[in-house]
Length: 219
Image 1 (cartoon, one colour):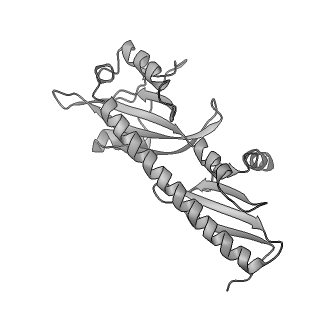
Image 2 (cartoon, helix red, strand yellow):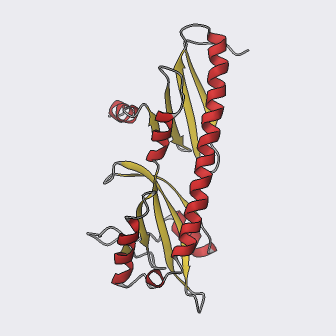
Image 3 (cartoon, helix red, strand yellow):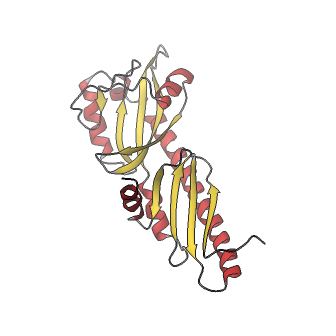
């Protein structure tokens, strides 16, 4: 049995997306049983989060696969493309943005109006979708405008006649649901939990004010 401390930290790798879950709890009494209970809760929470992530991946890929076949998206350089995305974004609350950058990377078609030129040609998810012609997953990022962490998913837009790649349909998914899930999960009293990416960047947390505390502590 490993040595027990007044505070316990367990690190569990999540699957599907490159994240990690850490849960820390105060041990006040019955420490050995508390350790076993916490280990079990960590496993349950991590497995449930992984299952939810897999469902999001499956649903997003299916959505983009259908989206790229629509006439409005087949012509990402036309104004009608952005107007169409703005309308359907309101019907899909799981996404915080939708866009279809051209094969050059220039983003002319976006659900949210752009105030300046945007080019995403150097983004890894864009290159993977463009080069390999398949569903791609980006890296975690902090959306400063929405004040939420998010991740981009891409799928190539190919001409239905010539099979030429015209662009990449992109769905931006907020990761706020991670924090919401942690808040609703049955974590031990006085526990804290956070999820980081592979670089150690904090992207989800419980309690909700933990992220602000960490950001302030780094200043």
